[in-house]
Length: 326
Image (cartoon, rainbow, N blue to C red; front, side):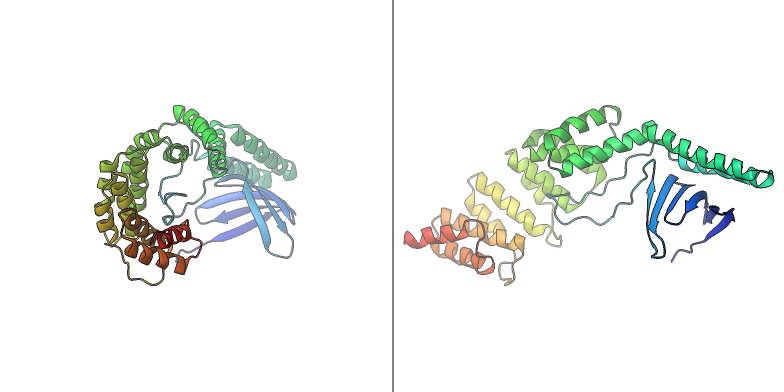
C-alpha cells in the first residue's frame, strides 16, 4: 500500500499552498469553488459545502488512466491495451506551479503581499489560457473528438478525422486502432487488414485481437489467412469457442461443411447452461446439419438453442421447416 502525504499552508483568508508527496501547488477561492495550479496544470474545484462532494477539472486537459484489463467483447472495443497519446508538453503544469509558488513566497516576504498573491492568481489564469491554446492541448481535443464520433457510430466521419490526424501523428496507436475499427464497421476489410495487421503485432497479443483480425480476413474472403490466425488459439483461451465458430464459418463459406462440423464438435456440446457463444455454436451446428440433410441432428441442436433462448435468430422458423418437410 502506498503512503500518501498532503499538507496545506494558509496564505490569508482564501489562499493556500498544497504540499503532497513529490508535488506542490497553489489554490485560492471560497467554499464550493476554488481555482488552483498543481503538478498537472491549472484546475477548478467545484463542490457542495459541508457534504464532502466535489469535482475537479483540469483546464488544459490531462491524461486519463486506462485499465489494463482487456474487455471481453472484441467486436465492441477489441480489448486492446494501447498506450495513451504522447503529451506534447508534459512538464507545463509543473513549470506553471513553480512560477506561481515563487511569486507567492516573494509575496509573503514583501509588504502588501496580497497584490502579489493576486498577481499569482492572474498568472494561473493566463497560464490556463496558454495551455488551452497550446499545440498539445489542441492535439488532445482533436483526439477526444475522434473518440466521440466513433462512439456515436459516425464511422465515415471517424475515417476522415483519423486520416487527417495521422498525417502529423503517424505513430498514434489509439487513432490507428479507431481507424481500423471504422474500416471494419464500414465493410472496408482490406484496408482494415492492412492497417491492423501491423498495429496488432506491435501493440497487443491478446487472443481477442487475433479473432478480430481473423474475422476481417474471413469477411474479405481470405479464408486461409483467417483459419491460420484462429488455429493459434488454444482450448485454454477464454476466446476458444468463438475461434472454432469462426473456423467453422470459414469452412462453410468454402463449401467444406464436413470440416465445419468436425471443428464445431470440438466444443463443449454437453454443457446445459449456454452462454452467447455456446448458443451460436449449437445454432451453427443445427444450420449446417440441416444444409447437409441430417434432419435429426439439426433438430437436436436447434431444439437445444430455443430451450435456452426461445427467439434466437431464426431457430424457430428452421425447426418448423424441418418438421414440415418430414
